[in-house]
Length: 163
Image (tube, rainbow, N blue to C red; front, top):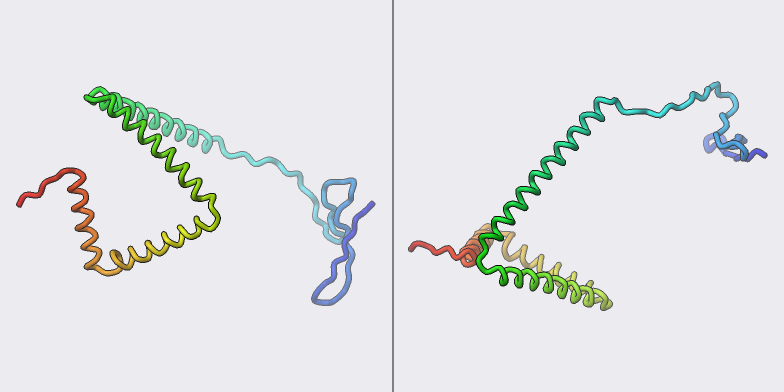
């Protein structure tokens, strides 16, 4: 049983019937009047040279990653051995993990309250606009921001100015 589609030409207004596809065959039927023959399709394969180059590149990146991991592990071992008070370091680490878990729980609870996330987005947008106006728009305020950041860096690192 043949399925036909009626196509109307917009330019001339004529109606032409065309056989689109037979229900028992999966391949499309060629329209009448066209002498186009179907050629069998062959799978396209990439040249072997490109495959070899990509394989060696993957091996190099894997080797580089292993070397980097070994360097990081060796550096961590050395720092751990040089640490004097190991119990406080472990306690700080556990405290940091608990703080991240707790803050994630708080954010999830706030996020579940209707309309509150959108309100907080508006507050963030407003603060960003104010910060841009206050510190980034004018050259004098940018210089002030740079001075404040440098001062904060000095307080954190404990650097003392020579007067």
